[in-house]
Length: 394
Image (cartoon, rainbow, N blue to C red; front, side, top):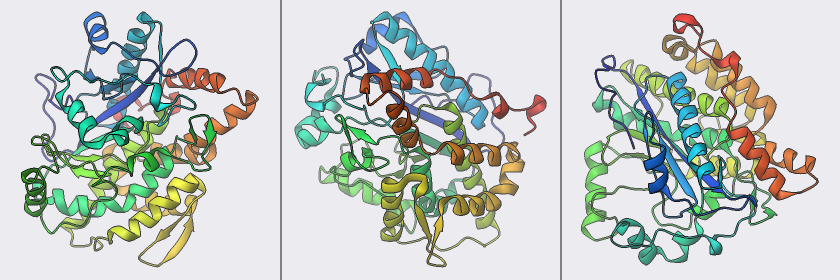
């Protein structure tokens, strides 16, 4: 990921920096997933900012933002990267869209990067995990958060785990798999869960203990040298960022803005609570996994449990409590007025999965037409009402 600062740019001391990796689907004229030539696209349409790469499946184009200071910068960079990806795809008779799973393509028909000379890591994954790796043809939105004070990185991570189900519910965008409605809001984690060492991370007493665990797994060959864990949240093995990996890829930049803003405000709030000695104890993994299942199944209709009171809450009520807690940090970060507006819009629209089901019904169940709609929606700009006011006011 392109997490180096722009030349000459200085981030404020203690700033919570941001970066996003977005995995886009590449589809052919029939709407099905198509193998993309990443190298020729990079040569003919270089990124004006950020970077890109392929993935184990050749139908994936991953776009990576530079280090940013705000959700506004993230979505501005992502809009440009999506335009670049679309230009590359058009040159190869293809299109791009953002969603966690393709509505009807089958994994058995997808080309892979299997050249051991150019893609040794992917070849290792195929050898180690077989059809688990071949069939996990999913697309994610990963958010990196640079914590300004490294000594708080693990205490923040232990408590950032608590909001993973809420983030998954807001991003859920995988209701369909191989032409069938799964009955879930996101089937993506049903595919990823077949890998070992996945899901919500444990509570760690210290960052040193975390890295000792990673090194132990590397020493016995369970994790490749130079690589880290694949859990829903991790400390990145090269960038030392907190990487939130739970989110589905989503078509709307408004939803990306909301997710990134919530995360930046949550980390800022956790740091303030830690400094004041007011942080709640980290929850056990099993309780967060229970809420994660509710989010996978029901999305924004889920009643997620407030485990401190053992109270299942309607999603909108839980979001209202979360926003009230984040309000001081959101104001300080410059989006205090826009964050509640973005949340209200998300609650009104429903999940990206809800939107897919509505659009599919409008087409009379025509799956290629749903793909067309997702391509169209992925190309849309950020809503004007979410744009920062002059001078950065929010």
